[in-house]
Length: 265
Image (cartoon, rainbow, N blue to C red; front, side, top):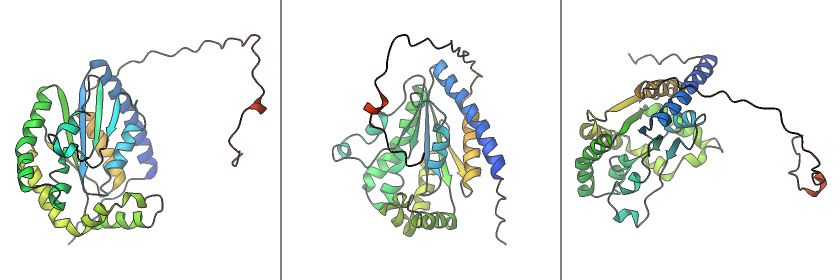
């Protein structure tokens, strides 16, 4: 018999729990900044697995000067001639920063491998060098956390259809996404090979069950908070003194300014 689908949490609980976790994310951010730590989080998985939704919920309450997102486009002709990891390395954090990679150097083990964008030699070299590259990052003082968002075939298809029918989401269906529908097995094999080579002790893979988006968001954020020890950094209370009087200054008339039409008064 097929396994029962997980019971979805109530929206009210989801919103309250997300708000609680986001407060904790702010505390984590302040601890990273205060301690001068360097954190890298990779978000990988199939198309429409929900990576972007989790990243959005993490970053919407954080300071972009502390926590930033790296979502690199396809490499340029010049970048194709560089050391493979070079264009990713320039986005690594300095002290007191956290970088979230919305897809990462693992493009070579996934889409590039399946779609034939790299040679067998380049792929094999990646599999050899990636674990050493990541161990080097860890030795340098970077905390590297890797998430794989796992989504079923049926759920991915449901999300693709929802994107196709929603004008605000159609841009998410790239030609590469559409082609991936026909290569489910190839992507599965590529992911299994990738795990076999890169699920290392210094930087293991953490799999997020992403068939239910809200569950995946809460579970991933909760796990991330547990991975990054953080004190409850006390922030100084902000004191707002009474505003000073404007004195004799006279502002120009409002009629001299061009206002946006009040379509929604």
